[in-house]
Structure formats: structure tokens, C-alpha cells
Amino acid sequence: MPRHIMLVVARIVADGPATRRLVLRDPDGWPLPRCRPGAHLDLHVPGVGPRAYSLCGDPVVQDSWEIAVRREAESRGGSAWVHDALSEGDAVAVSMPRCTFPIADAASRHVMVAGGIGVTPFLAMACEFERRGADWTLHLLSRGEPPCASALERLAQTGKIRIHDTTRTARPGWEAMLGASAAPGLHAYCCGPEVMLDGFAHATQGWPTGTTSIEHFVPPPLPAAEGAVRYSLRRSVAGTEMVVESGESMLTALRALGAKVEASCEGGICGACEVRWLEGEPIHRDRVLTPERRRTHLMACVAQCASERLVVDA
Image 1 (cartoon, rainbow, N blue to C red):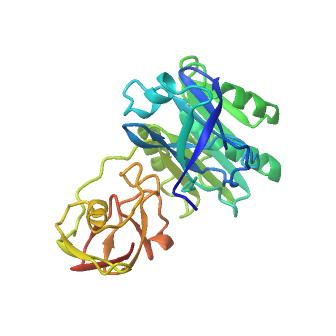
Image 2 (image 1 turned 45 degrees about the horizontal axis):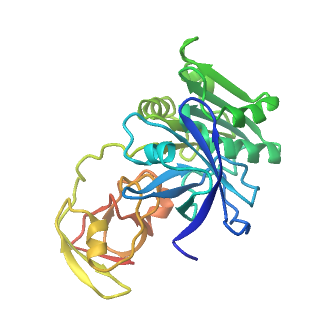
């Protein structure tokens, strides 16, 4: 399967303040691979590089993928290009979708909390929850009119969406949205600005492991990796090896060794640069890998090493 595919912007919809929803289709009308709710793709922005956006359409629809992009005042180039340069009929390069923010299938109740454009992955999840007959609630906090208004309107008849306009009413407390404590079978999800994610993490810090999920907009600042040392990095596939100084980028080193490693956020939140490690002691600093997954894989953009040698399958 190719790393990137070319799609056509079949439709652009103004869907809320400073928000454009893009409907992407195969230029020849072929069906697209089925995606998991909560997945995202990289839109490859000319002269800028990949930018990750959550898929917000119904996951069972196979003739199109949908993303919603809010115009950001401090855009790194992605949202400005989508709003100022992209037109219907244009061809765009996208990555195959990947899911680092999946539905917790074992849960019997789902509560989602979104801040502004952070609602996008939950729109896809809500469609899936309705299809399953699941117990779910979506809280959307916005300042004024919410993004993705038409998509929200389609789900309004469920009675399970709570929109909190914080310019009109006080922001609800975490207990009001999540409950005083973790209820049996409950899984809580949060996507939004960093201050919201910090509040969610604090409110659920006593919850059992595996009952909460967070997705970041942008990579959070990373502290220096405690215990990181100078190490020898070896590619098992090619047999090439080089010394990496403490604090230097493993992703950069792998590319210098000839490895074709994809990357997007370069901050440990998107899952693009996942690499299998075989030997050594990596220091994990990503926000996407589960403890189980970390036993065999790492995110090269942020990982460091605590051993003298690290062997990766790349």
C-alpha cells in the first residue's frame, strides 16, 4: 500500500466560524479503505509538509473521507492553505489514516468532552455509537457558535449532545460532565486545547488505568529526558549503525542511516513515526503508545535511550 494517495476535494462546506469541512474522494470514484472512528490523516501541504486532521465523517461511508479545518490565527501553514488556497476540484496528497484515539470497545458508557474544533473525532465516534446502540454523551465547549454545526445538527435528534456556549453560560465543572468518580463501565475521552486536557487529566487522575483517553491538538512541551545517554543506534534491516548524542533526534538519526520513516507532528502525538525496537532500553516520551505497545515499539520523533545500544527494525 502506498504511503500517500491522491484524492480530489469534491466539496468544501463552510461549517461554523472560520471552519471549512472538506469532502475528499478518489478521482476515479473508487471506494476508500474503511477507517476506525477516531482516526486521523495527514494532509500534505505544499511547501509546509504534513498536517494531521481528524476524520469527522461517518466511518461506514466508503466513497469519501471528511475533515474539518478551523482557520487558526497562528497557523503553521496548514489551516491557512486550506482556507486561502484550496478549492473544489483540487488534487491533494494524503496519508493513509491511522488511529491513535480509538473507541474503548469494552466500555458500556462513553462520555466525550470536546473543546471547539476538538469535536471532530467525536463526530465519527458518535455515528458509530448510534449504530451500536451504545450509551454515549458528547459535551462540546465553545466560545460562541460551535464548529461543524451541520454535522452536529444531524446528530441533534439523538438528544445526547450538550453544547456549552461559554460566552453565555458558565463553563460546566468536570464533575457535572463526568461524574464525581469513575463509574463502572464508563470511559471518558477528551480532545481540545492544552488547558482543557490538563483539567481533564487532573479531574480523572484517580480513575482506573485504561478508562480515559486524550488526543492533543499540538505536541506539548517536552522536558529533558531523564536518564538519556549517548548511544549506538543500529538498523537491523540494513545493518547500518551510528552514534547518537544524548538529546539528539532519533528520527533524524534513522533518516541519516537511510531509513524511510514517516513523520508529521514530530512531537509524539500523531503516531506517524512508530518504529519497532528489538534491543536496548528506549525512553518513551510520546502521548499515543499504550504501556503494552511500548514494550515493542517507540515513537522515533521524541524517544531517547537509556542504554549504550539500541536496535530498531527500520
